[in-house]
Image 1 (cartoon, rainbow, N blue to C red):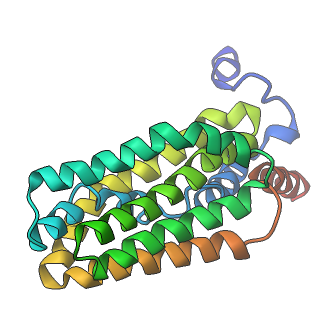
Image 2: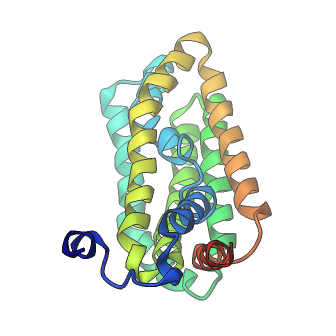
Length: 223
């Protein structure tokens, strides 16, 4: 008996805690699907192209490594100068529309890369997907933190981090494989994935993952 009590999580006495795996599956499913991590192979995978497909595209259009460095530096400069003020302004808006807008901006920037062959055009695409980063990333992080039950916050952050790890692991290889066959397909595919992710965020029902988890626990207790 002492061994069983030692293994039981603190506060897990009684029927109300009888089904934590069911609740966690519901919570994880919602957080991966909607609360900022829906593009497991999408948002991180697309952004991985900035370090894999994008330099190849810059070189294919006749520019050198220094030009690629300037373009990526432009991304960083925009974030340093603008993001702190932008985030303060965006706090007055609901998270979900901002996540959708950010995904669409990122997708538009990457899709437009397929027709960007001059330095100004490439810089414009960088500006567009950088704007999407600044709108969606901080909001997604806040959304994940706010949606998570306090006692499972670490698991939520872990699921979020795992989605990024998968995307950054698969993204460069998959992007390189597609680029070898059709560079434009890579950029248009990134845009399509962004639209799909935004659509998923827009169409899933309202309600935080916490509410879904509580419903799952209630269903488990009543079963």
